Length: 127
Image (cartoon, rainbow, N blue to C red; front, side):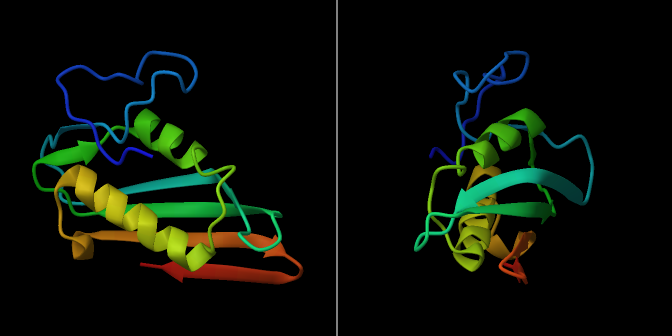
């Protein structure tokens, strides 16, 4: 999965489907100090059982020069639907990919994944 793509023209935005995915695309920060993006469409599979895990994902970051374009984030998150990840490791991976795309240190990005209950257990992991 490609963590970042920088260009003056967006690849994913304005096109249907994932065939135009080019990584996490960014745009110039218009002057915001904090951005929070929330998605309830993140799905991965348990790396042991292969059972689907569904998440509420909250990505918060303190931008400097760039912000994440939302459609590229949606396609990025959709890319995990057939991959096996534990909740805690996935939170760290997403945080690191967003930090890399934004050219930020990891402590300027916070990712919270709330795994919806499966087997009566809900997990929340923050990185």
